[in-house]
Image 1 (cartoon, rainbow, N blue to C red):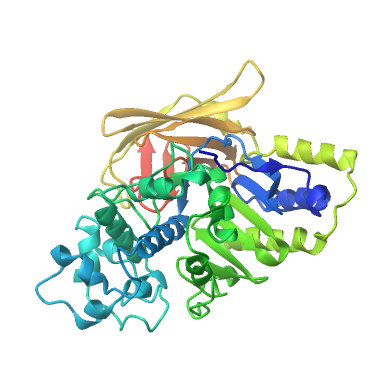
Image 2: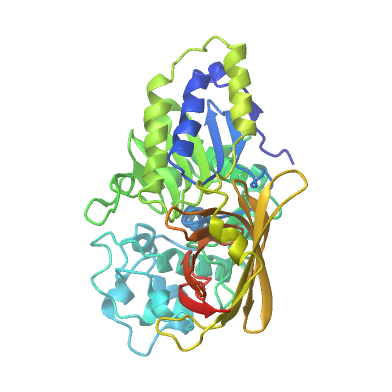
Length: 486
């Protein structure tokens, strides 16, 4: 079977000045947005493809709420097959999950209500008790309002619908989609994280390649028509990307205030978006015939997602032309150099300190029972060295519940490895701050995406450690303070 591929071309060949793409990347870099990938396509031709080291084209990435758009397509495919109707009350499909007395607002809620984020729940139900059945929680949690009335972002709705897809098909939802959308050629290694009860996390669990997102974007932009085959009726996609709900009342940033369809967001410039936490985006701008795919980790950057939108809107859109632009060998070279130099930026600051020699290799033991201490950590040792190739690097070693752990970091450079306790890939750097403390930031780049932060304050003969994590569900032990002595 023929699989979807994209022709690569220069920006100028599709009416985009190469300089605007360079400005786009430089703007995000200057504002220290932790980008992981950037793909730009116009007129179905890929005119920029960049990956921020250590991320590569074949690096699987958690796509978070982009998963919701995939769930919609799976539900729409089942509807087109006649196996369900969007007007079905959801309780009809889960009699085994219902309590003895079903609240009438839950009983009346339809699949369409859930897809529109107009369920009777104002928040994600399974977060109230993650140890209880996530799908069952959707039917047992007391509702806050009648379904179909108000937009409230609720990740348990697509999770429950994903469970429905898997119940009806006997397949994991992603395997079902790979089968039904086979011409897209979604990567074999892509998968979905499952909840504790074995259901794929249809609201946030997709782990895939950036190119998978571009292929999915092509499928949506072409209203289901791929390589001459109509994989899904255009009417389902038209409905999903239309403005069905207003979101301005609850939206925290402008990019989320433009409206909502069915598991797709509306966006500025008559666009729509598959929107995932942390900068996972498929931005569709039909008036420009442009698709922008990004992966990133903006969770620790105030308004980070909005900055990606703004860079696209201000650095590229105003300069797009309808006609082919003249090629510029000089610009092509600069663009190639820009792409090759993309990377996660190490922390800025000093690589040296008078304190470094005094604490290098010294072990500090955690004083248990001190106010505010987090549990499990027993000691810390930091070491600094210079490699044969002249890079300044270090290692933070610690004992956690009798388990030896170490975290490699660079000073002025990034070091990669496997994050202790979690077996997840990371890239880390460190720096001496002006106040004399040492700061390490580790970017988690794996099936979970986030960051873990260490701030070490060395006293005359003691050490205070501040731990902070910015990640949705893991790394709970990396939050709080520790007081240590030799």
